[in-house]
Image (cartoon, rainbow over all chains, first blue to last red; front, top):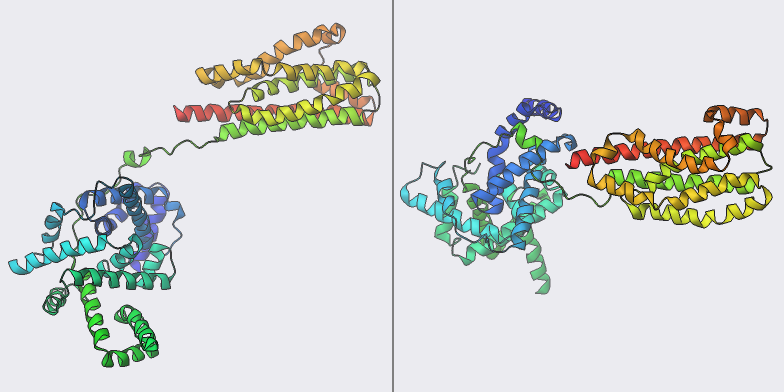
Length: 207
Length: 288
């Protein structure tokens, strides 16, 4: 609650043009917002651009923030920046989400120094498979699944971030997961042995 | 069999919410009972659990750089939105044009329909002077960049203008000095119009710097031919307010109301045009 109050004050100061106050919010949320964009868009450079665009748009439209979860409001702006990028891609289909991306590996091994080499390789593989599978979801289901299962937001906050009803969030998460299941099954990622690995590997992350 | 399949499908749809603990207790219990009996649903639940676990296991990437905003990055818009079809200045000019057209129509209507008798020299002077001051705003209004904006007003007015002279001229010869001058003023509008538009388009500074000149110069030009016709009255340089007072002192209610209407309309038109000019200037400055 204290953090929330602090946030409301930073927002209020940012609204009056206090850029330093707003930049404290940027520091607080740049990593989650960048990760949201990274999972939505699949590669680092577009995610970086979308993140920057989202922060600029957020600063300019601080006046329209009506309280509630600042994170949800910010994520909504970030999601819109991602939707814009996805639309742009559709109009020039040269760039594909399925293209393997060299940067992904670097991004993945950085915060995860614990596992052995074998596990590390498997995690990288799994991350790559997930990236490609996420890319096949409709953007709205992808966003719902990322917010719910990658970022770990409550469904109520997701509803706020997506601007839809709670029931819609639940159904998008369900459909997204169901489709991911089918994709992963088709790639042999959900065989019983692999299943055990995944759940063991995620024990430390999942709460 | 079909019924069984439907029920099975319903349970399948509940697997994901069940995973999130989002089922009501009775629904949850029913699903658990089904899971105990249905192997495929049990397997699917585990697979969905694995999907969720895999997503949760995705490591959080570090931010590739700081996204702090700089004053420069915020102040200068990254991309200016395309100019809207109708700018505020154009709207202002459009409004001024419409106001002027309406004003002329109203006054002409009052003159032709509500005029009781000739008001004498004073009245003629006032009317003509008011008419002249009315013409000066009309000049730039007709010349507004949005020519299509001015058109409806003009055509409307021309349609109306045909009648009043015909109605007033025979009955009140003295008043003819007033009405035709307006009509001629209107007919003149197209010729100075391109001039103003051209100047405005090429050199933003010139209409920007002296709005007063815009208001006065055309007036000076227009006044001379008008004053040539009745030289005696032209010498009488009483201010408009004085003339209005004189008209009021005449005691003719209809007459003074008419005079006041003229003055009021002239002032309103002037204000509207000044506003439009200021808007245009402001927009030019912003654009360049």
